[in-house]
Image 1 (cartoon, rainbow, N blue to C red):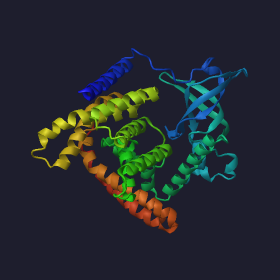
Image 2 (cartoon, rainbow, N blue to C red):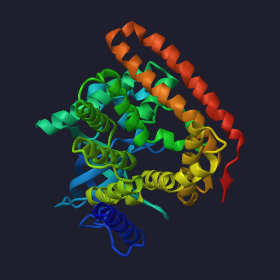
Image 3 (cartoon, rainbow, N blue to C red):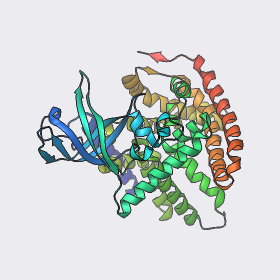
Image 4 (cartoon, rainbow, N blue to C red):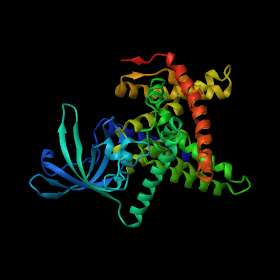
Length: 421
């Protein structure tokens, strides 16, 4: 009875907090960069990169900077804080990326910088304001380096690992671009036609790092852990592998949600705490997420991730009861989960993108298993490629064959038109 009351209290707290935040009754702590002078007067900024560079257009990457100090055009310097989103030219960010025009520049050591999370950078910028947005555009990168302490070296190692990963995946062609998107969140090598197909077929959530990816990574651990070992040891190893993956991929809003849920469920297993309902875990995850990183609550990946899970938890059980009598259990479970996810994410999709794709309800059932197999094979072939370099061509052939199969299946569901408003 006490446990039931505790669950109800957590759920009620989550509902109240969500209402206060999204009704804007309680403002969130200010995390964006607010300079001490008029933004137009700023011409130099120094800070630390706190996100993976994200390609926003053919010309620019979007990079989030935790600002330390800024300098005005009159040479006055003032300390500041907050997160600034800066646009950096593609040639600057991709200077060290394999198979990029910019990465073939001679004497690239004097022109190329490792722009990844953890790097401390100083740059000149231009302030551009349009009717809708304000843009800070990097015009000249003065310096970019990592601290010489343990944290800085650790972040530099991560950045180099991501570059090496991109180098290996570039040898796999289009299949490598999909693996990069699924395992590191980097979509600059993903074929644009494939990206469009996923979007129009209602499968964009598969390309976003989330709980599905963590379950695949943790499940892969079980292949190498003897069933005779203690279950707690297996659980700890899974959690360690998940943290390594999150550290490598970067902590997006949807991935942070999945990580918090994994930690909660893992702690329950380790300390033999009775399993709680899915809605309880989701609400507790929401409260922890808001406490840890409140600025995520209006992010697209946050809204879609929580919305999809909420729909699956609340709608799927009722639909299962209706269809379980005449639909096979495995198909019924997958179908009702898709319906629940689409039902709760449809308002968000309409608001942000102007359309919804009903094809996602059915296409997810067919594409998700293929993506799971694709990821498992990619991990196996990556290991073989590092041990036996000559196997890279074999891996590329096999992975691209599966890639074309996935592309054909995704393309098939494009006959279902999107609903636009």
